[in-house]
Amino acid sequence: MPHTPTHSPDSGRSPLARRSVLGAMAATAAAPALLGMSSPASAASVQQPRALPGGGDLGPNVIVFDPSTSGIQAKLDEVFRQQESAQFGTGRYALLFKPGTYNGLNAQLGFYTSIAGLGLSPDDTTINGDVTVDAGWFNGNATQNFWRSAENLALAPVSGTNRWAVAQAAPFRRMHVKGGLNLSPTGYGWASGGYIADSRIDGSVGPYSQQQWYTRDSSVGGWLNAVWNMVFSGVQGAPAQSFPNPPYTTLDTTPVSREKPFLYLNGSEYRVFLPEQRTNARGTTWGSGTPRGTSLPLTQFYVAKPGVTAATLNAALTQGLHLLLTPGIYHLDQPIQVNRANTVVLGLGYATLIPDNGVTALKTADVDGVRLAGFLIDAGPVNSSTLLEVGPTGASANHSANPTTVQDVFVRIGGAGAGKATTSMVINSRNTIIDHTWVWRADHGTGVGWDTNRADYGIRVNGDDV
Image (cartoon, rainbow, N blue to C red; front, side, top):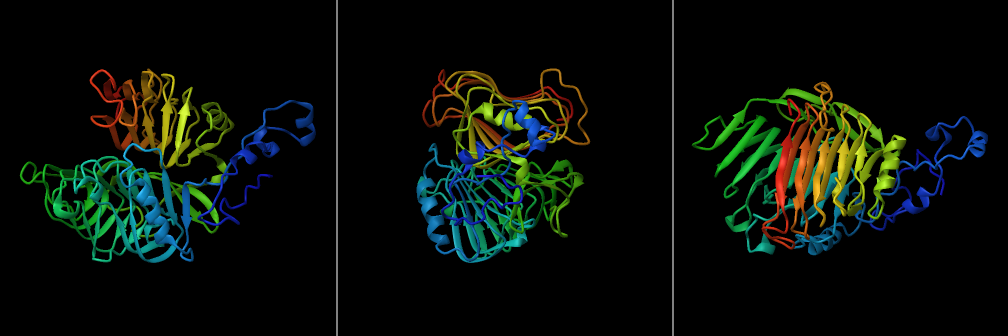
């Protein structure tokens, strides 16, 4: 199957019945330019390693809808039934909606499920309906509603208010709610923290029983109450600073921020948008039109599927490709090593990295502009000294003009199984921006015990201006 850079990854395939073609593509040599060859003749005379192809099919766990797709609600319900209570299961899903209007949907999100629009702006993809997180699986208690996300959609909720009752590791990014947003479960049972960024909620946000929250670079029509701790930076319509009573901490702007990379469609071509850095930001990036930044075609990404080896991922990075990790679980026997400036490692659907033999899952060099986003790291059964290292020990370069960002990258020690790590994250590079993380030593699940899922440190910051 020859690799054609202009070929759309989903061309000719049903959105609901896409299959991986990576195996066939991986055996195909890339264009001579990717290998530094002067001509096909020189390639024949000198033995060269075959280059990995960029782009590719997004795999069976990325489900792409367009407004003409039939049975959308039935597919959403099928995924939810599987994932609703699968707190430590192996299922991983990304539900992607092409630009257009979708009527009468209620996308209920369970564990390890991400929903996102494929436009440049949230308003390019409108659901006249809801994206719902509730806690029926846990008797109305949302304090364990972890690991799910919504991004880049406009919602017109049926009732006028969308319900998003979550706890940790459940970002709400680049969303436009044409109504209100309720952060508590049905019956106002407990919920335990969350995160909104680059979003506009036209109506009021009602935390009710929600214990704590952070909202950044957004716009809200009002904020009804606080329980323990509500923090705002760069939020239009935020309540005034009043901590500790009520417990609002409000910054007029966010000193430095950069939004998470995201997948979108340019016609029929998949691309990844890279938002630019902002200083003293306030409000959304997309309110006045196209967001500012650059984009990369999917042909510049190695589209990885579960089962690929760390050696193959590193070969793709060495070749100069970025990584798109499709939903699933990736077992590693060596670190993923990011050495090139401006490299993007973007996960979909809570792609999960597990170091099996005590290695570090991912390391970066002390270079500018690396973007790590949208994946989970599970500690393995053999103790890792670290799970994520941003920059080597002693890193000292100034990256203030183009920092590394770590966004929606979550770490777990135990819960899904026995795991150990001395330190989860080590940040050595200066100016790194950590934009929403949750580093969790499990207090429930499997592989949990005082000496079982050992974890000495969550995050250690050695770099300046992090």
